[in-house]
Image (cartoon, rainbow, N blue to C red; front, side):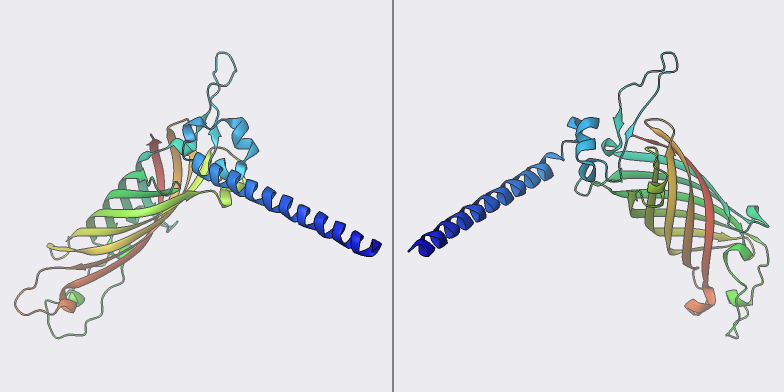
Length: 269
């Protein structure tokens, strides 16, 4: 009888413990769910709250401190999660340290944060490329008897020029820069699909086509808005000119591939 009574007490205590554990789990789930919805209003975030829950508020983000030179005091902190857009200008050169100037690019970009994915951005780019042919491609090998085919034209180091219009998508984050432990350094990757117009100075003909740009960049915030940085880009372009007589597409096509090192300056807003 006593043993039965003890067993009943243990069962009651076990059931009570399970109920409390379940209640605690449900409460924690509710807190997590509320926190997930609450984080949408980033204007209410303050440094104390961010430090208490860094995995939510400081994941790939920072509070920027601006020091007043006259008083030595810090002004209001700026939370980088509030960034909504970005304008930038960049100048690119060749990755070839023996001849940086054989490739030169002027680059303008506009980016806008995607509202539904807080760390992702879409962007527009316009680039003007000037380069020696050898910085973009090797000489073509002719496989046709057409004397007017592009593969029968020797371009050597003749200048080539392209204008690139692109639409892209990317991501801002901290990976390598997380080791620096700086609130001002960020990384980004972008991929652009491009429409390209090209003028070949060798045969004085116009080409157009499509291509791809991928970029990896590191930016340092100099203030709440202004930043500078460097970026590495890889580009590919498939171009074709209008046919003369009955030319095959392969006789009038060019494929360009190149990498570049860019120095960037811009503004977040």
